[in-house]
Image (cartoon, rainbow, N blue to C red; front, top):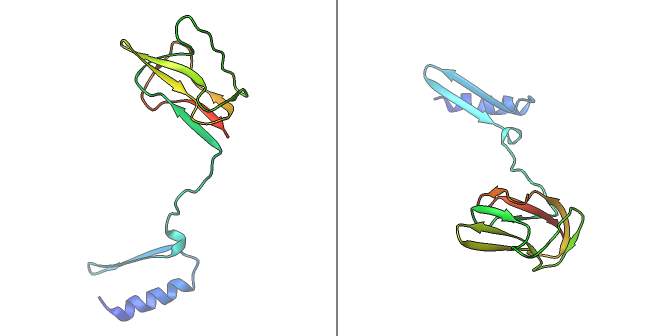
Length: 124
C-alpha cells in the first residue's frame, strides 16, 4: 500500500469532523479512527453498597422465634442482622457490612434467592 496515500488520508481526516474512515481499493484497506471514535469506559460513582445473598436458598427476615422489621430509610449499624438465607439444613446469616441508611430493600420474606443477588442497598 502506498504510504503517501496513507499520509494524505490521515492529514485529510484532521480537517474533517469524521470520527472514523475506511478506504478500500484493490484488496487493500485503510481504516482510521480518531480518539472521538474510541469508546470511553463508563465512569460513575455510587454511594450505595449492595448486600448480597451469601447462598442459594430461602430468605427469612429473622430466625424462627425472633422478629425483625427492616424498612427503607431505617438506619443500620455495622454488624446488624439483616436476615438469614436457609439452604437445605444450613442457615447463612446476613449482616450489615457498614453503618448507614437502608436505601433499598429488595429482599422479600420467604423468597427464593440466588448466590450474589442484591438483597439490600445501604448508603453510608
